[in-house]
Structure formats: structure tokens, C-alpha cells
Length: 313
Ligand SMILES: Nc1ncnc2c1ncn2[C@@H]1O[C@H](COP(=O)(O)OP(=O)(O)OP(=O)(O)O)[C@@H](O)[C@H]1O
Image (cartoon, rainbow, N blue to C red):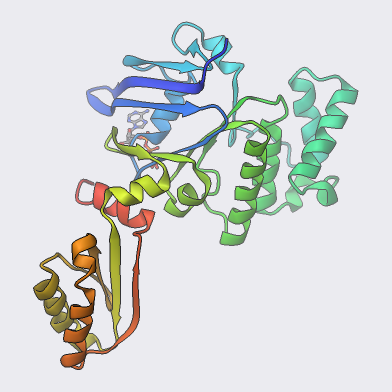
């Protein structure tokens, strides 16, 4: 079946008992893109993922995966994708290669095909050098990469990654990102859930922000950043005692709310207010309030997240 969307989610709702957990979520994932489902704890990301992957049945709405309906064509749907983090069956006593061979055979490959595929995947995920070591000696990052490799044995067209880098250190996390980008460059569509804004920002082509089971917004990372308004000014004041004085100056000159985090004052600026920044600086200088850092730039995805979900949890 030819469809432009790998995944089409239309108005799905799901409650546990009387508790609504997903309350009308809709989005499409285009073929070949990395789509991020982003939201705070308990937002409904995992539940949405379970509905798409047929582990749960939604109460309302439809989900099409490569055109197949999750409610009526579950088996066809399950042939379209793979999920990582589900390889609890990995055998610790065996090596990475042996595990790949077993999963290859389980996926219906012949012995020779499984060997070839295992070699390709070991190479792709930088595991060739440690391929024959017992898994017990593997680091967290190596395990995640093996997990990713195993989920790709059957060459799925869609891959679901549920919080793929939770608990990894920053360096290992970057290695995982590279591995994910590599497989997308070969045509796999990826839907990932994450609580890390940085991860969504650097990996996802588009992001759906969900909170309390509702879609708050969807767009590219830069579209989301634009949603909360043009630019952002951050001033780090040298002397903490002058903080409230500096805050008063910014509020007075720009007539805008100011948020404070430690010694940093942050204000969101539209184009008109942006022109008035020199007046703020002049006032600070006049009052002998010095600063150690000053930036004006687009807000981070973190700011978008805080602004759109703040106070709701
Ligand atoms: N089997 C269940 N029975 C009852 N409530 C559940 C069940 N599974 C999840 N929930 C509740 O549904 C809500 C959404 O959970 P879900 O796991 O989808 O959120 P999430 O966005 O994936 O959160 P996290 O980032 O913490 O994994 C939470 O309040 C959770 O407590």
C-alpha cells in the first residue's frame, strides 16, 4: 500500500478506568523523517506509543501505520515496525554477535543470511571490535547500540524509540544520536519519545509537544521556538545584590515580564522591544550595574517547553 505518511494518528483517546490519559491526539509522521513526541512525565507519550504499536487499543480515533489500521489490521501493522528497548531476551552469557545471530534466525533469516546481517549491523553500530566479547562486559552505551542493531535485523520501515538515551552520559548519548541519524539516512522512519529537549532539538525533523494527554503544538524545532516570540535577552548580573534593581530597570524600560534564574535575567523580546535594548544597557551602566554575560538570540526549546507546559503540571 502506498501512502505518504508512515503513521497517521487521528484524534485518539484513551482512559485508564475513569482517568483520561490521551485526550484527542492527532499527528502524521512522514516517511523518512524523525518525529519526536516530547512531553513531561505522565504526559501520555508511552500510552500513545502503545496505541500506535497495537499494545493497547484506543477508546476512540484511528491510527494508520503505512496505511494499515491498528484496530482491524494489527498483524499487518506489526510487520511494519520494530521497537527498541524490548530486547529483555538478550542473553548476557553470549556475545553481541551470537545474540544478533539468534535474533536473525528468530526473524526468519537463514544461517548464512543471519551471519551477513550480523556483520553489517556490528559494523554500522561500531561494535565490530567487541563483537565476540560476552555481553556482561558491555557498557550501557554499547548495550543500547546492540539493542538498536537487534531491532533493525528485519529491516523495519518504521522504528519506535522509547526514550533511547535515558541514563546515558552525554558522550554516549551523542553516539546514539549518530547511530539513529545514520539509519534514517538509509530510509527508516523514526518515532521517538523523549524528555530531553536537547535530544528532540538535534534529532527530530518535527516535534509534537504533549502535556496531560493533549497535543499542545507540533512543528519543526525552529517553528516551535518562533511560537514563543522572536528573540530572547539574557543578562547575567555580576553582583547578586543588584539583581532586583536590574530587574526593575528592564521592566521599566521594556514593560515586559522578566524571569530570574540565579543571577540571570531573561526577557522575551518582539521586534519593537529589541530596538530598545540599548536603552536598558544605558540604564544599567548609569546605575553602575555590571554584567558578566549578555546574549540576545532565539530561545531554546527548553524555553518553549517551559512556556507551553509551565504551571500545568
Ligand atoms: N496501566 C495503567 N493504569 C493506570 N494508569 C496508567 C497506566 N499506564 C499509565 N498510566 C497513567 O497514565 C498517565 C500517562 O502515562 P504515560 O506512561 O503514557 O506517560 P509518559 O508521557 O510516557 O510519561 P513518562 O515520561 O513518565 O514515561 C500517567 O499519569 C500514568 O500514571
